[in-house]
Length: 83
Image (cartoon, rainbow, N blue to C red; front, side, top):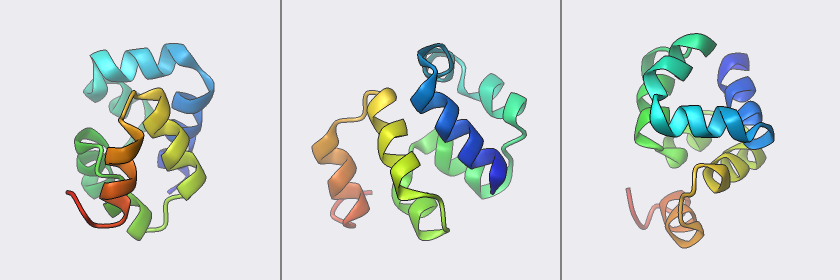
């Protein structure tokens, strides 16, 4: 879980990481050692699944902002209104 939290923190804190993630998500996920379900969820920007599996909601929210996810869409996803 530490790796996903570190990635989310770095996306939030470092615009260059966010930009690299937007252009080459696999490369960034490899660099952070993100595998399995978390890799799939992160690639799909499935914030609800990550939240349900214990990922820090603060990090998820600010990562979504940095990745330019629409806030209304983010909240709808978290509430289960949209997948």
